[in-house]
Length: 350
Image (cartoon, rainbow, N blue to C red):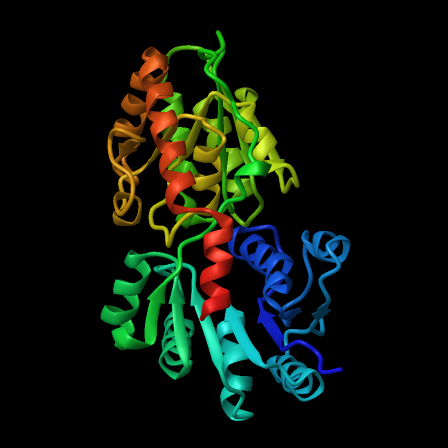
């Protein structure tokens, strides 16, 4: 009996972030369309290894080494052994996985662009642009990312398409219509890096002269600087750093307000999950969010402007019913435009 065609997904690691969780959803659902899936993580494992293992999704972890020659050999060997019908690269995997595909004449090679990568080093930026231009087809998670690839790297429009992130609404418990607590619980989720703008949020909250508590979910190199900043601002006792967790939707549904202070974004899966849970949202005023949402569905604040973020938080906490009304509109938009089944179906069709 002929085996179903194999789609190999190449991620750099198996950390718990938006791209990795999106790949997990793809691998879980693509068998329904007659495909086999396998995941390669040439840069090492991570928190989601157990998720893939429990989900029955085969994965291979690359050698733990800083020698990229060994990383490249790992990918070349995987191509020869697996014989993929489709080679699909993501986030870091697009560079080394793309090089292996190009030199081994592996086609079709598809890559998904998840972000606008404004903080890449020059060499990394150039390598990623080369990968995008060489891939057979580039999927963009938003029009913002599609425009970025065309303008920054000269990727031709007819070689790109937009497939938005999808959310499984059945896994997003509802916050409900209850008003905010006496001490409102604010939550922020994202890698602790400069891109995610947590420092702006801390400065803003230091200006909010009323009770609140903040939970930050995520890991990254900025954790120690953020803790020091919170201590200097005198607000550290009101903040909980949770690190990586497996039950993000549940924790979102138990909070009163979600803050997403990113400096730039490609899409923001956790923002969609927060909206799917019915939690009011304040997010940076970025073009990618304006593609689908407006002031009727979320509150915006200028990225990097802690004063305006502080005012926005105060405004929202003082008018909980208005915030809840926006949250209902946002959830409806997510249910119409960001369904997981639609995302997986679009990938399968491609």
